[in-house]
Image 1 (cartoon, helix red, strand yellow):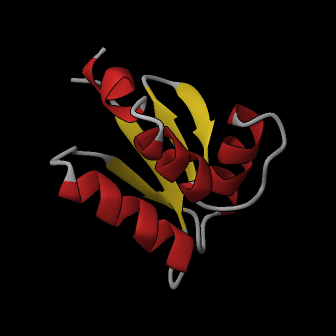
Image 2 (tube, helix red, strand yellow; image 1 turned 30 degrees about the horizontal axis):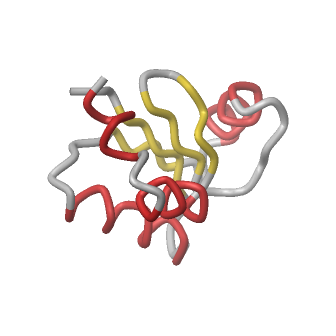
Length: 85
């Protein structure tokens, strides 16, 4: 199973939506809350090439984007393949 990391903040609807999809699929993930953690937020920004919005989701270290991108992968039937790698 792939390693999934998701950078989030408190009270973020898009973060909750992404986590709900992953949980519904039975996918475990590491949540990194950057709400009050500027070092982790900077780490997220560096890993994404400058993206500052949350959530930011990584599958096996590869950035896939946010909630919209995650749901697009699911709609297109591509998410399961990424997660199974």
